[in-house]
Amino acid sequence: MTTILREIGGLIEFFACMHVKNVVDMVIDMVISTIVFCGDEPDIKKGKPHPDPFLATMNRFPVKPSDPSKVLVFEDAPNGGRAAVAAGMKCVMVPNERYRQEALKIGVTQVLHSLEEFRPEEFGLPPFD
Image 1: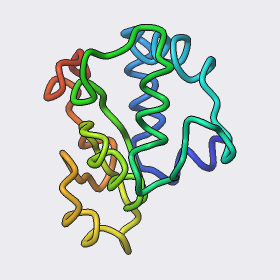
Image 2: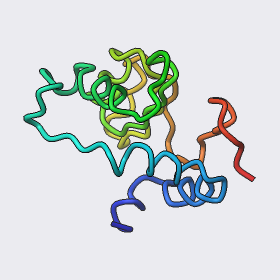
Image 3: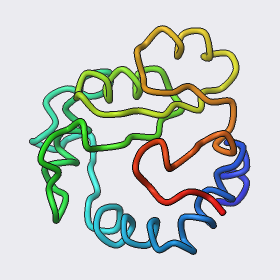
């Protein structure tokens, strides 16, 4: 798992910082550990680049956002970015360099080279120290 995380620059540091602020723990406890989707989910009629996967996930949050625009998605693939935009969600993309130009045209909120560039305070989250 660590090898995969290191492929996206800054991911380990991002999770470490958010862990200290209890942000990641809260998200993992509330969302990731309780929401698992498979390809044959009845709530997901179409996969990415359609918004169905993200909207279905949002609808399963224990505390549902009042609007999709209150959801922040992190993506590394263009179809995931398209799905987030189609769902009306904010999306930060950290694409592989070969997809960077495509990512810039999708209309996501931000396209970064590394998560080390991510500034959580721009999204109402606690800043990195």
